[in-house]
Image (tube, rainbow, N blue to C red; front, top):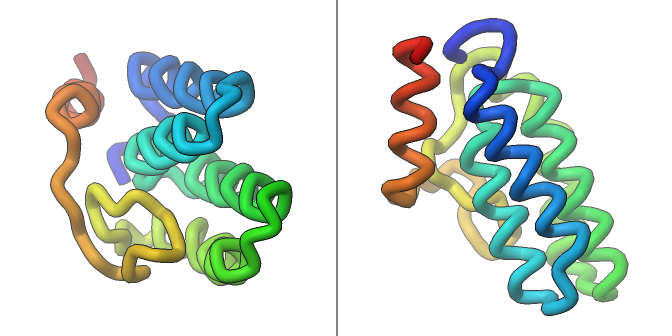
Length: 120
């Protein structure tokens, strides 16, 4: 974890992605925004958990049992994983992706996270 609090630029981007997920009308767009928010939130326990709760809500709204069950499991491990710095960087957080599988971080998000690490 970079520190106890999420750097302002990362927090703002996370908030924008979460807001976009709430307001998007296309289900695929909602998931895309939640996945991006997930990548940003991984190092911080509460935002990471909050993201998985939002993913669970969307899965339930879509009546996707597999995704909902996967999100319940992820809610349980999100905060401890973040607090211990044990999370798969770049993982999108979806149930269709392995719980521990690292994935490439999109360039724009990688730049934000790098600035956050440097405290810029």
